[in-house]
Amino acid sequence: MHYLTRIWAHLALLIPLVAKSFAVAVAHQNVLRLNPTLLYNISTNFAGNSSDSFLQTTGLDNSTAMMRPFIAYDDEFEHLLAKDATLEHLYTNPDNKPVADEMGIWVWDHNEVWMSSSSVDNISYTSILDLSDQSVKPLLVSSNGIPILNPNGGGYFNGKVYIAGDGNATIPPAIYEIDPVTLDARIIIDSYFGLRLNGPNDLTWGCRDNNSWLFFTDDPLSYYYSKGDFPTIPDATWRWDPKEETLLPVIDRTDILIPNGIRVNKDSTKLYVTDTPSTQVPGSGFEQTSTSPEQYYGSDTSAIYEFDLGPDGFPYNKRLFGITQRGISDGLHLDDDGRIWTAEADGIVIRSSSGKVLGMINALAIQRPKVADSSQLPLQNFALAGDRIIILAYTQIYQVRLSHAIVKSMT
Ligand SMILES: *[C@@H]1O[C@H](CO)[C@@H](O)[C@H](O)[C@H]1NC(C)=O
Ligand SMILES: *[C@@H]1O[C@H](CO)[C@@H](O)[C@H](O)[C@H]1NC(C)=O
Ligand SMILES: *[C@@H]1O[C@H](CO)[C@@H](O)[C@H](O)[C@H]1NC(C)=O
Ligand SMILES: *[C@@H]1O[C@H](CO)[C@@H](O)[C@H](O)[C@H]1NC(C)=O
Ligand SMILES: *[C@@H]1O[C@H](CO)[C@@H](O)[C@H](O)[C@H]1NC(C)=O
Ligand SMILES: *[C@@H]1O[C@H](CO)[C@@H](O)[C@H](O)[C@H]1NC(C)=O
Image 1 (cartoon, rainbow, N blue to C red):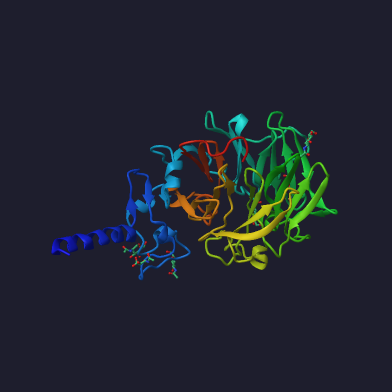
Image 2 (cartoon, rainbow, N blue to C red):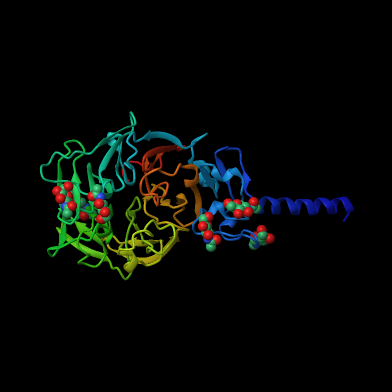
């Protein structure tokens, strides 16, 4: 081989190596493009820390590029973003109360996102973001005597909003159904053989053929949250069949200790449920609550599990799908292409249906809320609202525009 040709051959070998070792910025100024291999092979001198974002890992990339709103590990995520997409600020709560925390329900035919607040004076509330004028108003249900107490997660199905409420020491935890037009509310589930639920966390509807089922997770958070009775039934994942008028436990706590986020895919062939790490895990958000039941019950895993969902609506074939680096995979939403979106401590992480991490909406780019509870992470949940993502960041709400609608009529 000619000497010069040999040098070129060496250079050609070197270029991809250089590109592989470091962060590669691409045309879109708001996207930091990282090689997906960096998620498991950085360099011999790397130092990561579960108190920090993965992006703050020493040896990865310490440029200001890590403050960009989007991190892409795959073209697929970049293609989801609208041209020049950024974190658009939509709303700041004037009284600085953490109004936007959990739930993230897109009530598509009313152009609204329903959300629950973080605990304010030990009580949480439901608020409604009107996407047409970006105003936020409290949910005031019209049914007398039904306070939707300490709401957490929820879902929208067949024209009705369903909310999981944690209750308090006197008002039992319950699942509520609300008509978004009349704002009439009713309780649909509040007990099992006369025992109080522990604290419904999140819910989702699945339907096959002519059957539909409401799946919800029940965990001991209400005890921690509202100092109610200590849990009297085992934590479980439950299924309500309105046609059969039957409430069944479908996933045992030996399978998932503290079930949290829950979603089915578009055709109801898969069910995803997340577990909750114990208080001891840095970044879990529960470290400060030494009386929290997570301390006793916690599984020490922030795992996301996938189940097959049979035509009879029963989950089977439990499979580990993903583990978050830190935080809880709390906000859990699926788009119509089966991608799994989770709000983790690092940001909103997007995984393909086969589990590959495609990208992330970066929590480092979101201002940490200045609220009394300083343990709060920058965000906990979000809504997939057609062709935009609505990010619930406590006192702030942001949106990210997408190149096309990723969810249609249901979330
Ligand atoms: C892993 O990373 C090191 C350091 O960047 C690199 O030298 C090595 O080739 C990588 N391994 C693979 C299989 O890419
Ligand atoms: C991890 O990072 C935090 C905050 O930067 C620091 O206080 C802590 O000492 C670090 N832990 C380790 C094991 O490096
Ligand atoms: C990267 O940042 C961390 C602190 O965030 C620092 O300790 C480390 O030295 C930096 N690494 C490099 C290569 O600059
Ligand atoms: C909230 O709960 C804490 C712990 O139980 C208590 O110390 C505090 O007084 C409560 N605050 C209000 C406003 O009820
Ligand atoms: C539970 O909430 C209801 C409605 O806000 C309130 O009247 C009641 O006092 C609360 N119970 C406790 C123990 O705080
Ligand atoms: C669904 O319900 C319709 C109307 O009641 C009925 O005609 C159809 O056979 C049902 N389909 C299945 C799969 O049960």
